[in-house]
Image 1 (cartoon, one colour):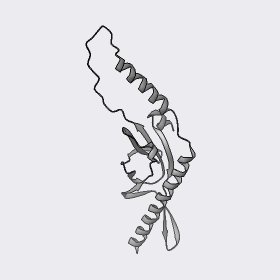
Image 2: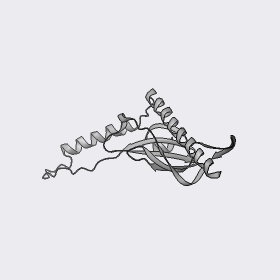
Image 3: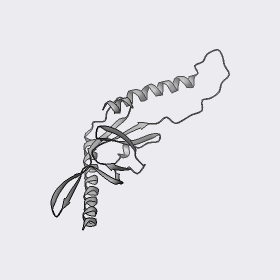
Length: 161
């Protein structure tokens, strides 16, 4: 959470990705890394999608946090499996301020409006979404990831035969 706070990210949800290897119905243990990345899809609530917002998946693996980009469809690729967190940040869109002749003052009405907007965004970034809607999204995402993981295990099992 300190990493999230330092980077001013907003948390959507957290989840674990585990791949269990089964051979002839015998659990051979966890697969924590693969030689090639696997692509996963996370559910991004429609209410959170908007212009200028960028989503990431933070991966905590062996004590190291990696920031993985998430596509607009909600997909990301990883080759390590452990704890993940879906987060977002609002990226400022560049605007060209109006040029007015100088009257001895360096603050224009437009500058004041922009500063108030920034202050509102900073207050907004300190909040963490903890609604029950997030929990259902988390479980839906985990279900999807589990199905993909089981499919990957089946593919690996068929390749080893």
